[in-house]
Figure (cartoon, rainbow, N blue to C red):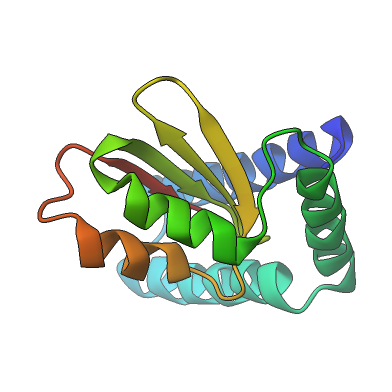
Length: 137
């Protein structure tokens, strides 16, 4: 993702939450609920159906494939299971790009076929999640 794309996402999120905060101070509960519902639907729709967003996700996946630490999903899934107790963190964005951190500060980047699929793999081999930082966008 380009710097402009990252900046655009941050601004959109910031404006969304600032608008909700402003409304909560000045509007009635009914107005707040209605506006929240409208904003939520618009926000979610922009994440999933907007062609610009999907092209951004494609660009993020292409960038991930160019990383030196990139592994195909099947290999990354096997690595997570083989080194499960060494996993310290997992980050997955809407683009399905997954970054996995290990105790020795090694990272692996992969692309999940489905959103949140990496959680199922970690659940199978980790008895508790308290030692693993999981960030899902």
